[in-house]
Amino acid sequence: MRFSFLKTYTIKKSSKKHLTKSKLSFINILMFGTIGWPEIILILLVVLLLFGAKRLPEMGRALGKGIREFKRSIKGLEDELDAPEKEEKKNEDIKA
Image (cartoon, rainbow, N blue to C red; front, side):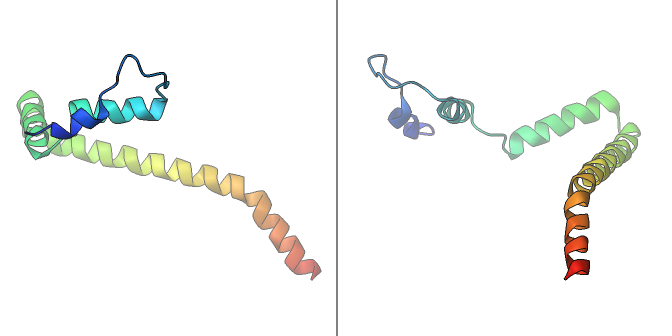
């Protein structure tokens, strides 16, 4: 039986315990499962049918550029936030 472990996580109506957000998300994962290889292949086939083989490399490049730009912006924000701490360390090193 594929979902036999679900029986241990059933919620009784008479239970006085309140459900927390983490318990609910855990139960949702158990109910719907995770995406496996067959689902990924199906999604890729649908994308291939919708956009065509010529357009997929362009979309991949655009997605890669977007991800790189996002990472650069996150790195820039981290550097801006860490800059005052680095200046304080430099000042302490100079004083010592």
